[in-house]
Length: 119
Image (tube, rainbow, N blue to C red; front, side, top):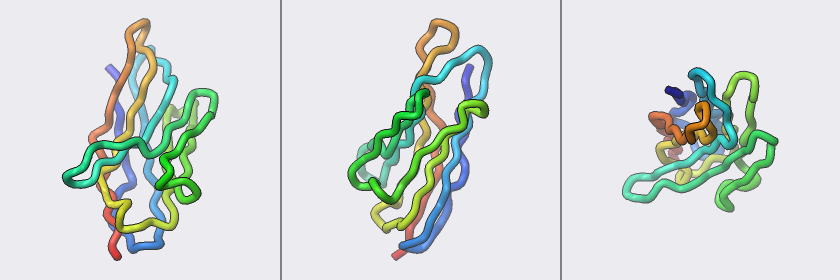
């Protein structure tokens, strides 16, 4: 069993910054990709950014130049630094971890972290 726990959400004014963290824990697992998704009220869950075990990153067009994803492979933790936040960034942010537990595919989600950006 792999647990995924996010932290760092909150309320911030437009133009401000927040940093989200996500830690994966468990036994005998390996991680290939760690991702951040977000879901605004009434909308689908969309990819924000992801990072591979090799450090390759990918961003949604809407956050390029404002958000930065990074990873501590020793701590199995991924971070999302969010700068120049806009009201449209308001959403629940979810962490996703994909890899293997032994030889079984791993696809685990955190409980979500609410980010609210006021105008």
